[in-house]
Image 1 (cartoon, helix red, strand yellow):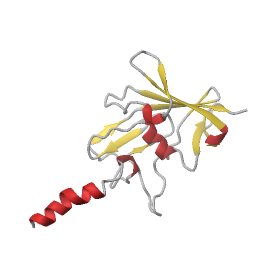
Image 2 (image 1 turned 45 degrees about the vertical axis):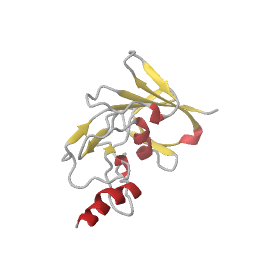
Image 3 (image 1 turned 90 degrees about the horizontal axis):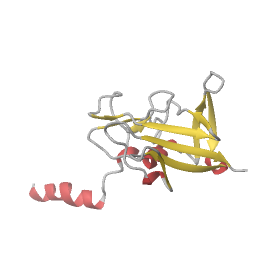
Image 4 (image 1 turned 90 degrees about the vertical axis):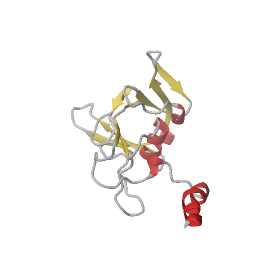
Length: 165
């Protein structure tokens, strides 16, 4: 029994660490996980505010339904992070889930009606930033360079896309 416990608790995790939290599928119903955050992510396309669709992080995995720990519940700019324990997720982790095959879907409500648009990211220059303690948006070279979304939900991250022409 002692050797089996050693293998299960020490050796296997060292050789095969668990997957990053944002890549797993949550089990059970929405909102039952003990750790909950609701940060905001702004998406701006060619100077116009867009919204996130309600299905980010809810794409099938291995042919089955999957709700990732970082996802959206409704159209807007609020992202839902939920997990069984506190996790540190960044804008980069969100982009891992949001960016599928180098495309993202945004919701344009400029006419008063929600219209989904799929954008090919190769057609855009992309800038990432977050609202910092300095009272302004601070640009970063990569979405992975933003701080983790804080538990007070006060951080706003931004994705700005400008058409290449």
